[in-house]
Length: 247
Image 1 (cartoon, rainbow, N blue to C red):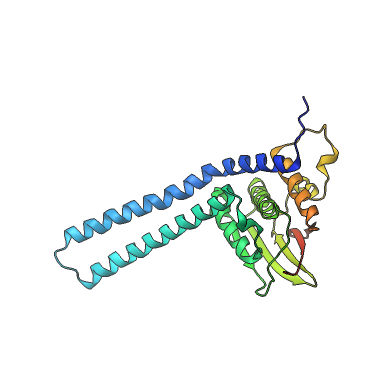
Image 2: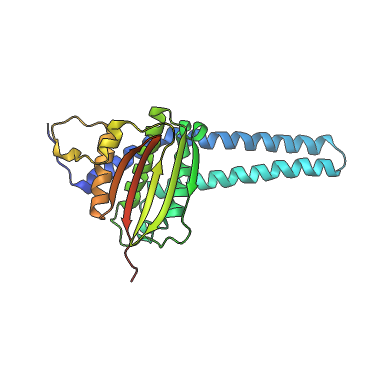
């Protein structure tokens, strides 16, 4: 049976499937900080009850634990906010995109992938004076998120332990460069970045193939080019995003 759907409906369906896939890791990330908060609160109460007076050492101990609690609360707040942005596509998706900030937030959220969180050393190298990106396709933010998710999952499948993410300004374009060291990304994955999967309608597609097909279609709509190449000691993927002037 052949089912035909408009591309925007297919994007919405795959968006919901993608969010559901991330929920297991998201719960893990929320559960850990909540447990830490519970233990810290319990220890703080125990310390206060055990000592009749508040000396400097006790104050320091409580202060350290309260600071840690605040950091954990902030972490939970960030994860929940990013999750909400992914679950509900609102007017914020149509505002200018500040690429450096988006990448930082996205990599924080993608720590729902436990291999990435615990095993991958990530280095960020951002150009400070990047202009905001405007007049992007409606699903560009979503496609960029899926692209990064695909890269992270590929790191896990190849057990790669390093990732470098760079941004730079080149003439009238912004470049986003992701690269690995010591280990190369799989040949199949690198090939999928330049392959028109939609040209093989009878080919059985895996989830990652569908995701990359949608990513490439959205990128094409925004005149975003993607180039992949293998280096002697790793792999590199370069996204070139045109700059459109506001107003």
